[in-house]
Image (cartoon, rainbow, N blue to C red; front, side, top):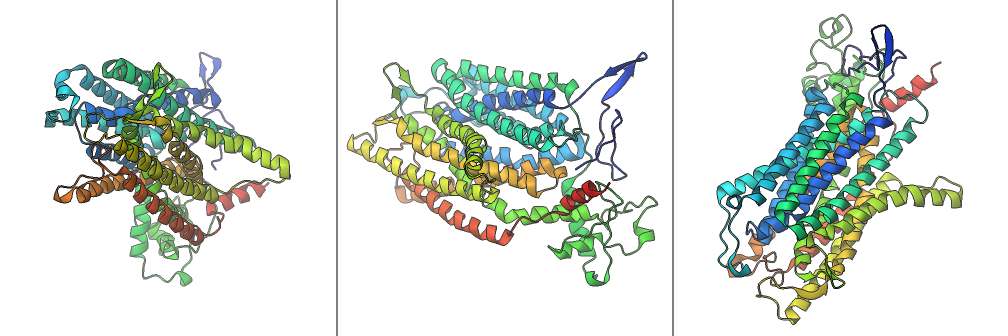
Length: 594
């Protein structure tokens, strides 16, 4: 936790110097003009940017698999692989954008640039719908036969748009939540933790609401008014997102970070290897500089003790400058750097258990399933196929807030004790619900295919089975609950386990897990498609769902999820109880001092 001076001017950190705070007040022509930055009043602009960006981009992405199959004539498995690749890209890149944000640009510039990139992507998607030359001609007689494939330039244009959208989302994902936290950095009250908890709840609720709007309002507009108007609306919403964020600029606290997490990790590893011959039992370990208070001496933990060799002072005169700073950071590191790296390494096993959940969260195949089912609700309304994900996002939003604001207070009121599931318990429940969700999906798809065969639908153009699309609701609701438990608990777990200075990295680490899962999904779909289509056989994941076996794909996901849950239990056992970190101990010491 940073300590701030009472003056109205900004405070800089000590010689390690990472953060520069902008002035909170200034004088103009002899009169004091107070400019209070940050706090609650800055949050609406940040959340508006995030919500509108999600409404625009997720609206596009949720219906993109249909756009790829109908307008670009891609096979269902290929379209799903493209969407997996997009998801993986947009979730891998946050590691790079977090690095840029923390080391060079700062979170404000990163979010601004990311919003502009997303806007450019939305404009190109709208362009592909407006100009016929940007995509293949319409298929003859609404049949897959005679459909002309998209040309390389046409695919490059569309994939450029997806790349821009993914890069923009990757810039916002690790920085938006952390930038909101930055707005409370000058608060130093006992209520700060409650304020931040309220902010986290509101942030995740707004994300859920935006996803609901994207898969209902945006999808309905596209479904009823066509690609041109629908993508035009998403472009306008993205423009409003960018504008809303920039308008709030005068109110933001902008921390100009100059710290490279990845460089510091590399420095610890390199220095520890260089000092590998030193016997730690005979060496004295001293903090060279500690970001929170340089005069404090804190001994590093015994966990991964080999890394402690990175902060061994061998020759004080050669390795330290006059002001006590390391002369060469590649030969001497701080205890904080060492402990930061240990924290990340300790999280890797539990982090890896979240990879499989991203496969469950992908809704490309449920959208294609919905296309083949009876989507009429009443006589005059037809449920948009791409809106099937709304039940997942709605459950995610309500489930998270239902647990935090109703279940927990009710248990406290009944028992009189602070009963609450631990973060690990919530993560595990989410993984189990994911297994249940894919299990239900297996049964429902088997029922749908059996009915399609009974009705003699395979082989027909655009076959629709007389089975209500509402059969898909249960599996999407269960997956939404899985997200409500696992995803939110995972993010909170990373925030708790890592130092506050690594907020952006915590979000990027979570996104990386989703990215690895999406890439795994791409490989899995491609592998299943190729293996099952050998020797002239029909692929399980063929575009004609009634000829394929999508239930087998869901069964494979169910088995993978079950194995992953037992792996999670082993990782929880290996991780042990959550222990106090050196920076937490230091904060307690500072509080006890008069």
